[in-house]
Image (cartoon, rainbow, N blue to C red; front, side):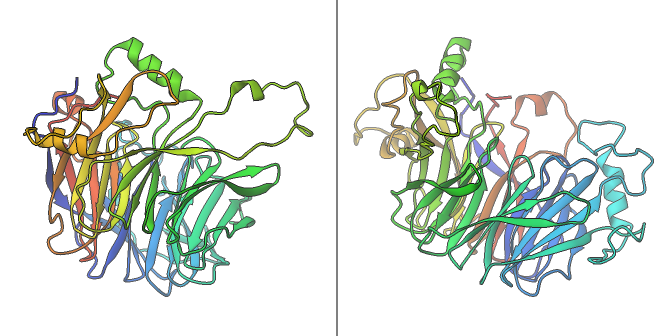
Length: 464
């Protein structure tokens, strides 16, 4: 079983220099040791996760606060960043990864000794930022290119998210709508609007794509989470998840193939994977009601998959049933603004208006959870029993429960924390220590403009 004796959240460094205004969100690059932060000062800052220093400041694209940003996945030789702003627009920024190098189209990665990230960092800091929307590619000295501005929302854009294939970009706004754009990838930076979804009755706070499918989750001021899929050529809602009693500020997906801590035997691990394969990755949500909840899709009967009826006339049946599987142990005193489900370790982190960062772990439940008793002196056990246990009643196999693994108060002093995310650790070389300790860091983003990097000490990785 994982070592969980007194795990702690330890501060590694701030990203410097910080913005002097509120910073909303940090988005780690999917391949490179960088992270982009978006701020109320209308800029996006790109920092190194190796030395935590500022590399570039992206300016000139938006007229108001930049509320959200996201890196496009699966792009070869180029970094593509989407930004969403309170000016109701979405910007697309591009930058060649191999500019000034002799390595052709090689992607800079942490594991490639011949393509060291330090070289790219030196290159990033050696050139001034350019805003070149109309003449992209004409100047070989250019760095970030403002490729295109997507205009459609009527009010502040709150969240942007790329699909796992990088084909679709989802955006949501205060106008209660979700827009899905298709990147035509035609070399001319053309995007096509493929859907405008308006079922939410309130401000849409967040959008997040399924890790492997073209399936979108959204959270809203109307206290609901909605799941969206494409049916033939039309996008529509397939589920509405109700349970929160306050604004749903953030949602995030579990990784495919995640296995909870405690399932060390190969038999139990395979049993868990098999029983959860049909329902797929779960969803975690954080809300103004102060709760973190985990949701799971109810697996459809396999018998409906092979009916022998041609798909063109077979009833679509795309509606899905989602169940609230667990409410995590309570620790937050105010609204929860952000949750993050680690794709590597399976841990969940949360943060919000109380400035607290909390990390949760899912564990094997050997026997049914006991009733809460006043004689229980173990803080972690108290937290576990006060949570709503995982409802695995319609799934065979091992049962689990969630516990609070570690937490830290006042992580940014008196300020609210707007966002939390996991990122691959890049500030130290690989070795015996990094192979046993989790090789991820937490990055928190706050109202005072600061962005802090944290390590989780005393927990060993189960899913690597």
